Amino acid sequence: MAAEPQPEYTPASPAPVAPAVSPAARAPDPAEIERALRESGLELVQTRSGATDASVEQETKFVPAKRERRPPPADLDEPLVQVETGREPPTPKI
Image 1 (tube, rainbow, N blue to C red):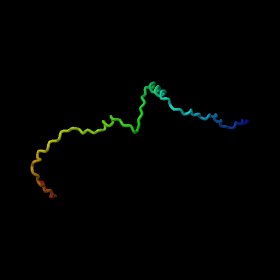
Image 2 (cartoon, helix red, strand yellow; image 1 turned 180 degrees about the vertical axis):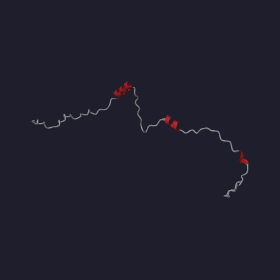
Image 3 (spheres, rainbow, N blue to C red; image 1 turned 120 degrees about the vertical axis):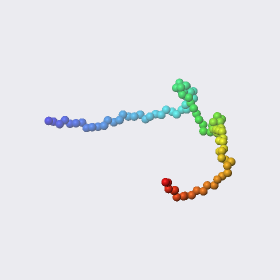
Image 4 (cartoon, rainbow, N blue to C red; image 1 turned 180 degrees about the horizontal axis):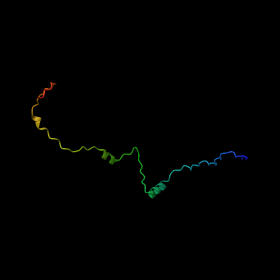
């Protein structure tokens, strides 16, 4: 039996990769943005940190609930009674 020579394993070199070319930075066209938003059905919302809205101030005003005052207790005009409290030994139950 003759041993067949096996070819040596050589990893394949990776294919040359072209460097990624970034497109030139350009300012987005507002008309193009508006058209894309209309076509997609989305709405553009922008916020500013320093902006205030009059409707926001109206919503934040506190208005207390109007409730009827509770009637005073019936025994309000009676004189106070002093009650002495203390620890007394329990009385045996018969």
